[in-house]
Image (cartoon, rainbow, N blue to C red):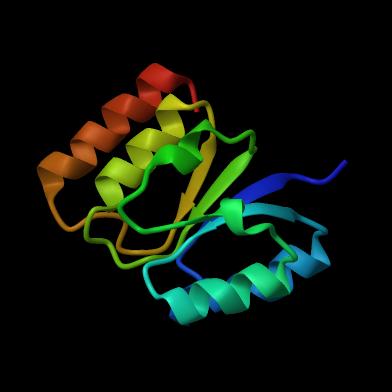
Length: 117
């Protein structure tokens, strides 16, 4: 059984995960990407249906069944993405910096503690 992954950010640092995804036989079940061309390339690469591609500001991906969220998108708005992942029962792996604000970091840590993730 492979881990099911939601990949947030598919260009730049997001593309760095492709080797690990293949090597460890992770199953990408959805992608979140603001750039339409990059989203389409990733959708084809991971053989996803169009309804598994989400815009950057759409948090409905959090309702999908997945084990892990990998967030490689820029840190702006990362707090809401990480919190959405944690509150929906998913583990979250984030690029650095995780967040740009200490107060937001503390809020993420409290959510993580409360979620048990």
